[in-house]
Length: 235
Image: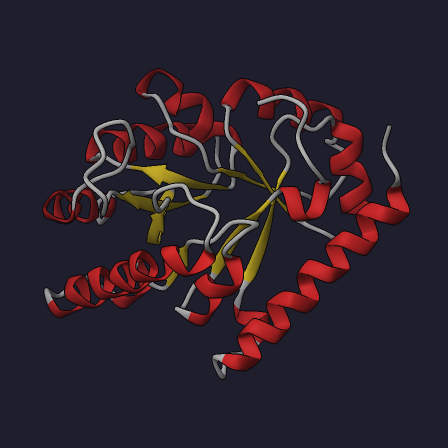
């Protein structure tokens, strides 16, 4: 059962927290995009947040997202894929999502671009970076990033705009700070190597428990679910 008033209040609180964190970092809150992570929540939760003025929504799984897209097609929504993208789902993702945060190989970039071009769409991409070296996690190592950017430079419908990070899970927001700082350093090293600034303008990092720290360290997109929609009953 959804409580639209409570959802609006939580959404307003997250926006206020973003503004305060931006203020501490001397940043313009308007430079930070809030992506409401709606995975496992039904389309009516998405609708309630959209009617409260929210535009950007994130999903982990392509198929679940496609079902929600169909049931909210009357709304002005920008859909983000934030979960791991399997190669066999890349075409569907390129044809339907507006932003894909989880690109970790040049082959994915090429497939997404081809699908988006065929669908007459434009799609924004972020390269997911693995800084922890955890074999259970996804993402490209820093040495693999230049090949991704090289492929992106040949795209017709896909545009690579920056980097994304999932730090190791933990409850302490400060434990994420070194990873956020390192992602910013990776961006700076890529810029020094000659990668165009337009391809590195975004840093997607920070979730419900640590998005304020992420903003202090330069995030331009924060991915917040529980703090907006409440606790999940399923994954």
